[in-house]
Image (cartoon, rainbow, N blue to C red):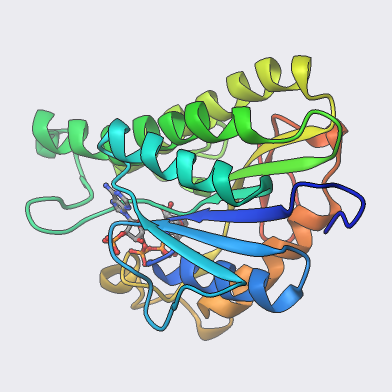
Length: 248
Ligand SMILES: NC(=O)c1ccc[n+]([C@@H]2O[C@H](COP(=O)([O-])OP(=O)(O)OC[C@H]3O[C@@H](n4cnc5c(N)ncnc54)[C@H](OP(=O)(O)O)[C@@H]3O)[C@@H](O)[C@H]2O)c1
């Protein structure tokens, strides 16, 4: 994807690069050599991620729009983002527990999940999508979750996480429609990474068969292959780690 013919270096951005998946995605994108530089945006510096000619980092809290805007300004000074992946997310922790029943619905917990899983990524898109090129292909992907599919919801439960990811999916679909008007080669999608061994899924991994529990590297490798294969006709879609389309 690197574009030697352009004056502006083609770069990649990973938001949430301190997380299990975000870290693996950022590292694999550096190793791919497809980008002049990979910019990690996260609340804390990803482990082992030193700033150099190929890597940069800036502190970004997706709950703070000013920090997203500052991160976008840094990105604009470094090059033109042709791939942006938003790998932030929240499922549980502290007072947050996925709800097993409607009795467990709690307004503060729902607000927190919507803020991190839907509003934050939408604001990231607001500040980073305008930096993508008009005359070259680019891809913006938000890591969603299959449980955010309304059509695929057969088990119930996990109200807040499901609903916040469904809201994220709607943001992505709506952003894709607006984005393609000015950037017909700009792709905007939601992705499901599979069940991945990270801090987010740690409390829920028991009972998941080994072959269905991916390492972050395995999932990130699969997701990058899916992203590489997507084109303008796929914009506004929701895809799994194996490239299969997921119903909304
Ligand atoms: N793991 C799975 O099985 C699985 C399955 C389906 C979907 N997903 C999705 O995959 C994505 C990546 O999750 P993961 O499994 O890699 O989990 P993870 O290791 O817990 O990473 C979550 C990331 O989100 C970041 N984050 C949370 N709130 C933030 C905020 N306000 N501002 C900036 N960053 C914030 C965390 O930053 P800090 O390091 O600062 O906390 C961390 O980098 C999420 O969207 C998740 O919903 C995961």
